[in-house]
Length: 347
Image (cartoon, rainbow, N blue to C red; front, top):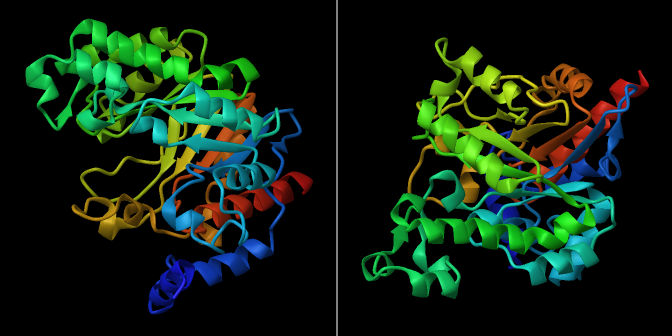
């Protein structure tokens, strides 16, 4: 049985409207098929780009799910994606440092106005990485006690190797920067990154290291948004004109982050949709994609329309990224949201 059919048969056994299966999502997408192909431009001239937080998830590239059958190569898939959406987030750069050779291929396979946002490498935001995924030059330079570990943190590295991680990251994305297609570097800080003076300094250090490249900040600890810290958090980001990444995600859990609406830079606003699958959000020993296996309803997407319109009035550019990238769920919701915004603007 083909992979897509196996996913479909598992899906259709469920009665969950937020996990209805590939075919149901395909039927919904068909009614708004071309909606997200171009940026949405507001009456004030703000540009809203809508896309997904991946274009290479294994469940997404399965034959006949999102990509047309026969689009089997990396070149064909990216070209098809770039004809469908005007922006994408590079997720792979979180796990492995990027390659300039691959980035040049991305430039060649996409139109000049297509935009890539890139997730910062784990070591750039205080998170662990697997030693085996580091480039050979860094692995061979590690002290013996670090080279023997399976995972390490940036704080474990000598200062010169921390600097090398940043240098190699920027070098790998240089073709995108040169082509004008590098949108923003997403600095996604972990749940244990709390609102302290030291951590605010780390955000500023990251901003300085990125130089003229735009960055944005997603905070995964709710402590940044509690009654004591919310105003200070937003004031800090506004004072330094650092775009705050607004999120939609599961609520009612210890790890939940509220859907705070705030534009902290006039240049860029970003919203990331993680889905609302509560039962798997904190689950361990499951594939990562299962946390994001959630198809938003029409009503849930419409909740965001006034928030998006408000944000677009304050920022010249806005990126909306569907991170519910299981199969064709994220691509379907991206098309639907684009159609809703176009309808709102026409009205």
